[in-house]
Image (cartoon, rainbow, N blue to C red; front, side, top):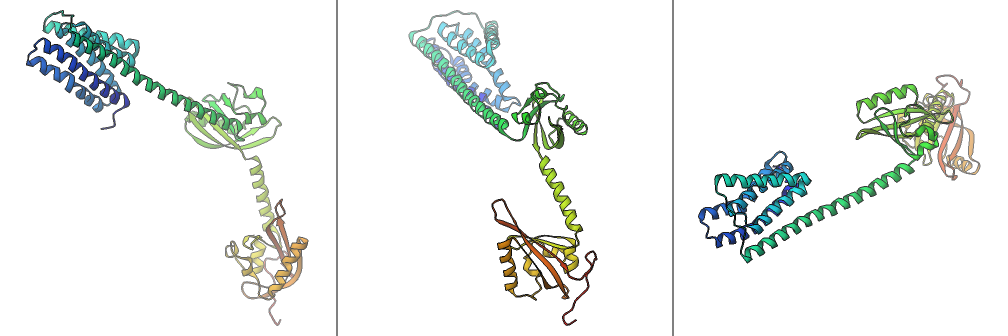
Length: 419
C-alpha cells in the first residue's frame, strides 16, 4: 500500500477532529432528548468509526485523492440525514451542513458547493422517506454554544490549512522564479548556442550567443531554424524532431560572414518543444585536422623524431625512430627517454647538451649510439626545447639520423665495435 497523499492525510485529521466535536455536541443534544441505545450506537458509528473507515477506503483506492473527494460528498449526504433525524435543529444543522459545504468548496470550487448541498438534501430526503418528518429548530444554550464554537473552529481550521498550502505554493513559486532566473542568466551568458525549437523547426527562443553569428532578423520567433544549416544536417534535424527523442548530432551552420561553422549539438524534448544546445567545435576540428596532417608528415619523414615531456617521458615517436633504433613504438611511449641511451657517452655529455638547450634553445652534434639489438651506429642528433607562452619548457624534440646511411632507406648499415 502506497503512502497516503497529502489531501487524504489532512482530511483524515480534520474530519476526525470535527466529528469528535460533533459527537460531543449531538451527544449533549440527544442526552437532553433522552435518546435510546440505537441513537447512541449510530452516533458512535458515525462520528467515531466512520472517519477511519473512509480514510482506509481512500488509502486503498487506486486514485486516493479522487476517492477522498468522493468521501466529502458522502459526508454531506450523511450529515444531511443526521440533520433530518434530529429534526433540523438550527445551530447543529448549520454547523454540520456548513462545514461539509465549506470542505467541498475548498476541494471542488463553486460546483463542489452546489453538489455538496445537493447531497445533503438527498441525505435528508432519504431519512424523511424511511423515518419521519420532524422540525425542532430550537436547542439549549449549551448545545447552541458548542455548535457556534464548533462551526467557527472548523472554519478557522480549514482556513489555516488553506493558508499553509498557499504559503507553500508561494514559496514554491518564488523558488521556481529564482531557478528560472538562474537558468535564464546561464543561457544568456553562455558561449554555447541555446535555443528552443518547435517540432516544425521554428524558433521559439534563441540565446544572445546566436547574435554573434546570425542577424537578428534570422532569429525572430517563428523564424526558420533550418535556414542556415547545411542541407544534410537540416534533414537530420528534421528527422530528430519527428522522433521526439533526445539525441546528440553534429550540425554545420553558415554564419553571417559565409563561414561554415561546425557544432556539437544535443537535442532534448521539453514539453511541446525541443531544447537545442550547440557547442562551437570549428576551431577544434581545424586543430584536429592540423594535428592529423602533422602526424602524417611526422610519419613520412626520413629523420627519426622523438618527442618527450619536460620530465623526459616519451610522448611520441615516428616510424623512422623505430626503423633506426629497433625499439617498437609501444616499448618507448610513456617510458623515460634515458632507456634508449646507448651507454657509449658519459652522463656529462647529456647534461652539457641540455645546458646548451637551456642557453640557446637548441643543441646539435654527432655521436655514437646503439640499437636495441646491440649494433653501434653513428648519428647526427639535434635537440630543441618547446616552451609555452609563459616561457616554461613543456617538451623536448629530438631529431636524429644515421650518418652515412641512405636517408630514405628502410634499414641502416650496421657499424660494429672494432669494425
